[in-house]
Image (cartoon, rainbow, N blue to C red):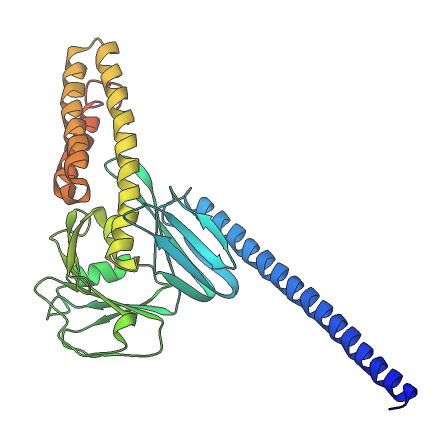
Length: 336
């Protein structure tokens, strides 16, 4: 082979190697910039969502529509480790150790719905925030045959915000798969659905509520896991409706009860101090009774947690009544 031909071949090999190196360099640059852009986008979503969460915690009853890029946000709350956070992907996440957020495990789309309620037992313990999207459908099964009477199902339907995708169906009516990401079927004890659910099992969660008063206490049976947990006040019941499953509900309510215990302990300290400082014996007697109610709540939290919801509810009613009695004719300093 001639020397010129060998030289030409080496030139082409050299050109190929240099071209491959340059191409690889630009691919790395593009990939790096894309990754940086993804991180930046995820960080911006986290920042905006955190702002909404914090601002919503200042006012009860707020309903917000949050515009976001078409991404999937994963919400995690682990009952065993008590770890909770939400994750946009690419390793970008936000811890929520104290935020009481009820949500599906994954929310996707370009719009989030945020609804906030105040949980009072009997004074404000904290704000419960519920997150969902229009891609989730909430199906409430009618618990009565005569629509003119009105029942718990209709009351619950009216309590839930108008912006969510919710429908009221009759017992035995089929549930069609209309392409939603998630279906929550809500029924009442003794009035089971009974119809066909024509949607994939992993998209459907069915809960059965047993109560005489939506704003008092009762039980919620998560039928997929066949586990029954209690609820305390309507805000807790809403949590069972918006939570992904029994574990998510249980984990989030555990955070709520930690706050309940902390604030009830502070209330105990304040009441004890008032009992000592206020000279009026009738006021002191009222403080003594209220201390018994607070002790009852604290001991129930320690012994039973959420399972003691009925006892906590009754004791909180007594505490609220005692607080009202402090200003009836005596003008005693209030507990809260």
